[in-house]
Image 1 (cartoon, one colour):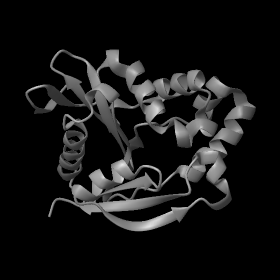
Image 2: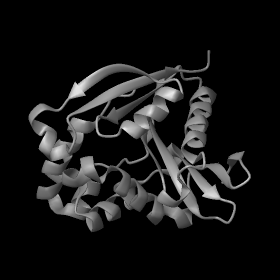
Image 3: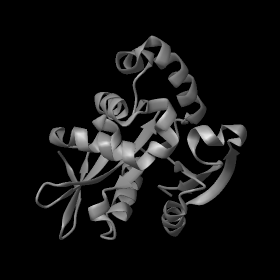
Length: 203
């Protein structure tokens, strides 16, 4: 693992450690289960699927000095995403019928990524690590990673029920770009709208 940043109490590392794969999948699910409950739920199957498709090349993680997993940020580029996988991966967990309708729901949440931008694919901090600057450090690390790839901007989506995350993004220089309303799909995903935010980098 490559250490990107070290504070007095935690490390920011590229990817995630092999022994943290299950905890990373569980943390991702618990952070985003409200909007992913129908595409991926129930929890047991969701965590199993996510654990199987997590791509460490599209992740940056936070680890305590004692080796405890503290959180992670994922991203999507034209070359892949943190939570990838295809219809075959879904079918191995949910069967072909379940995979088909779940795949349709997932496609509603998909966002295209241009060759000049990095699209964040979720950021979360474990409950016991909150308030220690871990989330901000992960954001800074993903910005440096995007700059190292000579990308021009970072994009992310924040749902209307996650005001705490939006405050963090705005404080870090992200600005709203557009709003996607789910309309009648609100009961399925658990939120009414998602705001796309962007930040220019490398200039």
